[in-house]
Structure formats: structure tokens, C-alpha cells
Length: 183
Image (cartoon, rainbow, N blue to C red; front, top):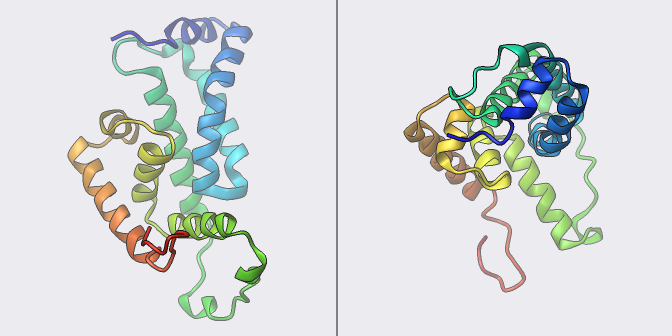
């Protein structure tokens, strides 16, 4: 298995800042995209932590065991899970006291409204279902790669995807496209 990052990871392990910069430039946008959907405002800090781990662990990287990108996503997902678990939770009763500060639908463009609905529906998914959906549908990884990144079997990933899709379909059933068909 050829890993396109192997040379730069080896360079980063030797302290080569240029190799590290290439890895960051290559992977940061995709990692940030997933982290933003998982964490919102904490995304940049989480991705920075991932690259700090890259810098400190690159010398120990063993080519051939897994693709470097797979390891990098695994570290990023763990970082997201840890941050989500550390967030304070409020009792369910407190949720009814939260004011709805969304802009009325008639003042937003249809695409923007749908994007916000989808983002909220994604945020409401359990973290592993959300990660599976983000990796496969937003980052366009195949099931095998996404399962490796999440550290689970392909069958478990497919189960997470099926449950996540079913939940999203239910939560987003009220959205219609311009032709009136269900999305």
C-alpha cells in the first residue's frame, strides 16, 4: 500500500518543518471542515492539537500499518469526541427556557435555510453517527477508509450510516426542494 504522505511524515519525524508544513497544508482544510461540523467554534483548537500530536509523534510513525491520513483522522475524531464529552450539559428542563433567536424563514434564502436545518440535524446526531455521515458524505471517503479512520468495522460503519441517515430523513422531512419533492 503506497502512502502519499509517507515521505513528508518521515521528514516531519526528523524535524523537517517544510515537510510538516506540507502535511498541514494538505490535510488541514479537510480536518477543519469535519471539526467545524462536529465542534463549531472549537474546531481550530482541535485541529491545532491534532497537528501538535503529528509533530510530537511523527518520528514513531510506522509506514505500512495504516495510511497516515487514516491515523490523522482518527486523532482528529478522538479530539472531537473528547471535547464534546467535556462540554457541560444542561438538564432537559433548561432547554425549554432557551429563546429561539433564528431569523424568520421568510427573510432567508431557501438554500441558506436548508443548510442551517441540515447543520442542526447533523449536530443532533450521536457523535459516532455524525462522524460517519461527515466522513462518507461530506468528505467523500469510502466506507473502508471511513471505518479505518473511526477504528470500527465496515459493518459497524454501515450501521451508523443507516441509523444516521434514517434520523436525518425523519428530522428533515419537512424540507422540500423547489419542485415540491421530498429531500
